[in-house]
Amino acid sequence: MRAVLEVRDVAKYFGGVKALDGVSLEVPETGLVGLIGPNGSGKTTLFNVVTGFYVPDKGEVLLRESDDLVRIDGLNPNEVFKKGVVRTFQIPRLFNSLTVLENLLVTPLGQRGESLVRALLRGSWSGQERELARKAVELLKMFDMLHYANSKVSELSVAHIKMLETIRGLMTPAKLYLLDEPAAGVDYSTARKLFTYVRKLRDERGLTFLVIEHRLEILMEYVDYVYVLHNGKLLSEGKPQEVVSDPKVVEAYIGA
Image 1 (cartoon, rainbow, N blue to C red):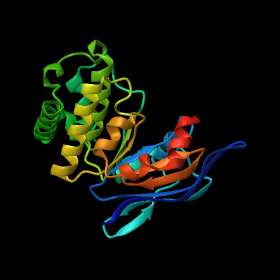
Image 2: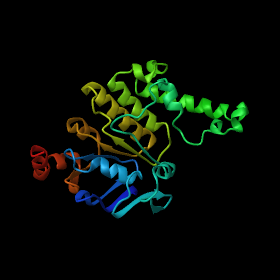
Image 3: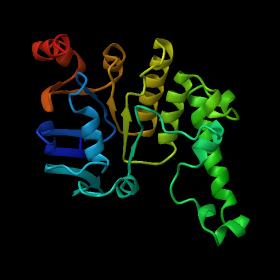
């Protein structure tokens, strides 16, 4: 299966600290791939490199465009987003004064109503807005959050805020979705529901995901393949059962 994303020998240094030290991995089309490792292993740094928040000191990040892989390292986050890479954040960055539905509707790119000229011509954007609202309602139904559509974000529980962060990312069509600890702070039952919905989107719509998650007992049930980072290096990779049985991985977690 073709790779959507390839990370090749990427390094990122902060002074004398090697946050990433020659990391290589790939995410295949329609893959649901896990990225794990103890705290400080470089997971979020890697996400920041892929999405343009950091420029790598060495190596390449490539994204599939049609039949070719094209370098995206060095692009700014807005440009990477436009290329088709969407990420969520470990600490959700939502608009607390807006409703759940409004938070979803402000996310997608290329909304015609954002143009000063077109904003005055309702017919030029109303159809697109209805389509976005339909998509938002569909996602809220899938994630069992439709009854919160008109609630302010400030009124939601931590679990539902985390769920909304994931849904908001899904509002934008993308080649690759990067989810940064979507189940952090979420109760066990809700976390399992979230991963069930993510896998359903992968299976039914062919979406592609790379997921950072510390809750291994949940993650390993849903992903196809796992990469393990430790001290900025790739420690292990393979199918979930292979990884959890790897003595190097066990030692890294016990010693963390």
